[in-house]
View 1 (cartoon, helix red, strand yellow):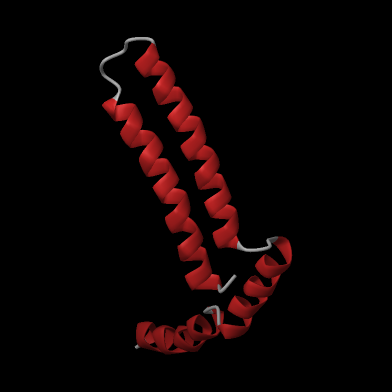
View 2 (view 1 turned 180 degrees about the vertical axis):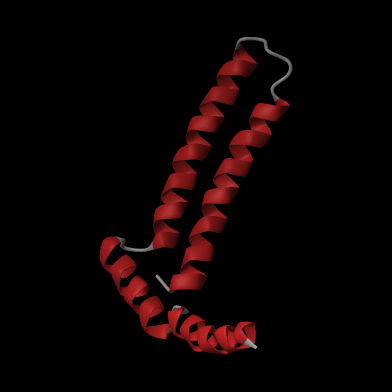
Length: 95
């Protein structure tokens, strides 16, 4: 009986503790003030990663290294991750 009473007393406390719409709007306004656009920032970082990766792969090719496919994949997917991260932040926070 005591356990049931404790459960019923704790249910409203957990419902109040959940973050709501006002907290998401506050986070959105904070992020909007900090960045000009998360998508633009991620595209700039992805472009920088792409240029650095292309130069490193070109250098490896000129040095005669035959096995650099893993490095190509690593640079490609890091740039792709940055592009998707910007789209994700824009979708979640609307910035």
